[in-house]
Image (cartoon, rainbow, N blue to C red; front, side, top):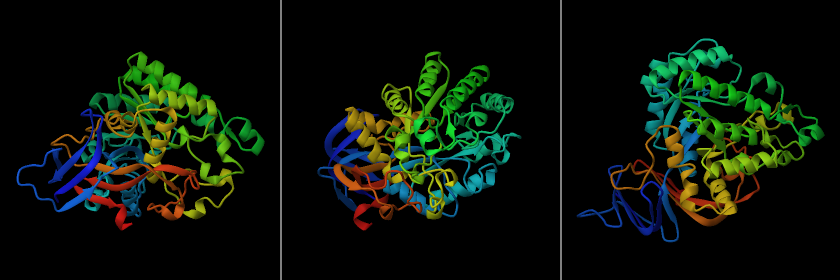
Length: 421
């Protein structure tokens, strides 16, 4: 399909582009910026007057299941996301090359967003026996992780990272010490004490960051730390990077805006992993993102059925549907922190891609045509009924957020058109 996007504000941090001009797409690639190719004839023209045209978002954290894959990839497109890193704690677990092949082939046929799987570091994510990493890598896994599982020994991790380092495989880990976090459901602070909820101390994160960074130092493995949540964790990553360790990190968009106070009267939508932390932690996460200590903002998309939330807070399932609020939360943070839009888009753009060793999305001629067109000045109230995702679970329900996605183009395919939804 040949698509002409006319009159938009093109923002591409990779090619240092920020100008109002037309964009031309053909055969899945960008074929013209400002000037149409010779003998140009479009199959579709998009009027982007007053809108921003930017590279599609890269989301480094999502849980996908085979049963809901079509719906969730459509939700990703509705959120302006064109590339997704899929956690291995999918259904089924991605510890078998055949399962990885099936996931990738199914995702490719749906055109909603490109899926980059993380393979399971251990068989069944049990932290006992190393999975067949070489075969999983050959099947298309871009790295290896334990997902939300944290119950594995330092010795297993040392052996796994030794193997990963030998072949250059990155290891993605959630920094949480299982013994310190055991039984906890909320940040260990005044709110948890008042509500009578078992706490997870901040040191559960810092102890894990220190151990994982030290093993990365000993083995030479590349380490990506998933979902930082504490001020101390940010500082530990800052030190590791200053020492030259091959460490990257991400943060959930929700943790950049919400705190444990938002749990309110046991709001189960705020049951997250890691838990929402204090205002001090939230502010440190923001500073760490802006100064580059944290590499990327992620949705941490984990859609849940409605009945998973109709339980007491401590028994509710963990997670939130995040695809369709990711861009809005980035725009809101950029506005409050006075960050230029081009820099903010990089948090779920080229910076995220670099952290995952993926090609950075760009609007340059010859680049894959992964594009999002959105209105940064339009606001909407977040409602579960408006979600494309099968899970309408989000702590942001009822909030008014900026940014309306108008179109999402994935490899030249019009994956989302707000006019038809």
